[in-house]
Image 1 (tube, rainbow, N blue to C red):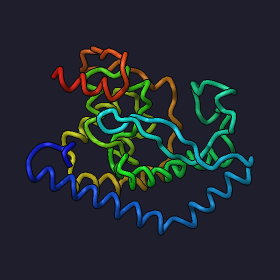
Image 2: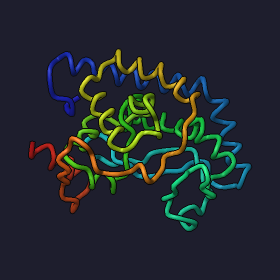
Image 3: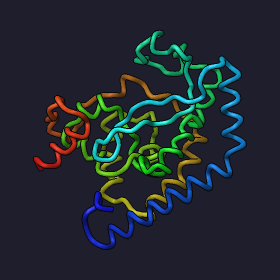
Image 4: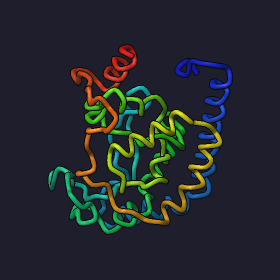
Length: 235
């Protein structure tokens, strides 16, 4: 709780959110274990490769952690391309099972493990790559003020159809109004958002040009965590 200075109310809210994260994650794993097992079997049977995709992401205050996902691409995806595809649906590296997982966001379910470990929360901005964090402007760095989430305000208000500046604005809007009540609104809104479908994220959507921001970038000589703390200390 020392990472959340402020009033007693805020500390109590953070404690309540952590208790909720742990309880909800454990319940979700217990309820969804048949589905999780089926997904693992489908991935394994398709090409015999590993079930999980593990990648380093930047979390709370820029601290990096290993994020878990169900693997949705072929095992040698990095050798077959850089991942910068205009239309992810036509990415030849995505497996048949992977297309279903991405369309339904089932590939994100292993992040329940990250939530139990305290690296993520049920609700929050989606975690970015450390290399992307090092390119953030001071305004965009605010995304690191809270733990990254499995779902978030941006995910129920456009999801991957949003441009990068739009996601930033929605994430900051959430951070400024963060509460248990808003979290419940987001959680309840996630299912219809998923059922509504949507396209995969496009590389062309990733831009650090943010309207309303000065565009001032921070030095990227250090880690994402170092860059975050430099941004905070210079406010």
